[in-house]
Length: 534
Image (cartoon, rainbow, N blue to C red; front, top):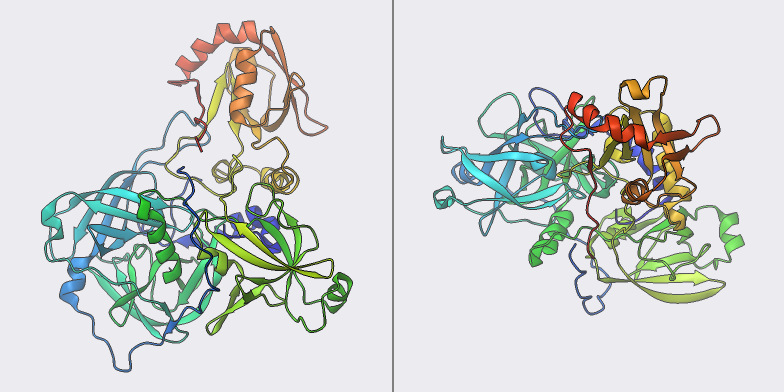
């Protein structure tokens, strides 16, 4: 999430809707879906960088490039994944493992690049070259869920024999020809399709449902199973195939080279840190009356209005409400919030997207009629509750007698929870997280487990407000409040005017708790994620 713009004010709900249509092209049988059930210290800041150069665009070779099929059959591999996701309805048990497949390609140094959604929640990972019958056991080196990229490797030396690494080139130009290479549904052999680049812009990545990065659209066929495969131009990789629309034709998307290079640079220290968060709500300045009210000089035809800096990101104490950002790292921001990069106008977030956590960005700001140069050290989003979907993690929960408590997460919403919860999650980010209040996570009474002790008691997705008058700041704090209470009767109050409080009879709960766990085959009554050590 390199930035927060006005459209992202409602980003959680909008992304959930979009994901019903825009999906990773990861083959899970003959369907177009991802089958999703739902830190290291920062690097030392480098010397102050010059304004970013326009990323060159490759227009394609003058002659027609013919692929080296022998090399591609060795270097573009098929990935077989046996994955086991999480059950957010019954978080103590997992669904049955499922098999799926994707594509990947060799980039050198015994590293294979693919999509994060190809290897997410993987229990068994295998790869197969097109020029061999044998499958080789693979393992994940690094995964970046926010940019949907991953690196995997194979320990068997025999696998690497004769493989030629594919080089990553610059961003392809509009209308230039590209080839999509991989193992899509409909067959087992290596597939090569051709098309042209039809659109380049910063857009949503379906894997986490909220992140936005530079994306290249093409009409080259990108189907389920192509995920993680290379998109080639002039013999070099110009993108990684990763998602498409279920009900559209000739609409496929690839991850742009700048995103790939950011990921590779990030893992140079053997840790993936992710993208920094500039952390501002913004609005465009196309309205001349608003520009005049803010005192924007007539000779300034660009600029972007700061509505609010968020407390869990980089601009706290740096930017103020009603600041007008004129430039970012020396690059002019247009009145619609875009910057001119090469032959394209891209969302201003593209400039931040090229930065790593710990690096700096310089903002040219108009404040109270004065032009200021403000240097911002880029940080990650630090709130405990994350807006996007997570993978490769156990869900937190607590079973207390016949009551199941969980934190509100994007994954939980993905299990068909009510639209009211989706709306409340949006409200949370607007009124709690973005205002820096102490509550960093919301707790739900998910449901009441059937038992004689819970007869005549019904709750579903009730949002906890307080425990005996104390508002829990996150799920771990909620569990601690219950564990450390010495009272026989504990009162839990919920959000909303029509939800009755729940009175926990702790003597009764302690009596029935072991039998409830046994009868419902619950091996452990809780899982609380350990706090991250910064």
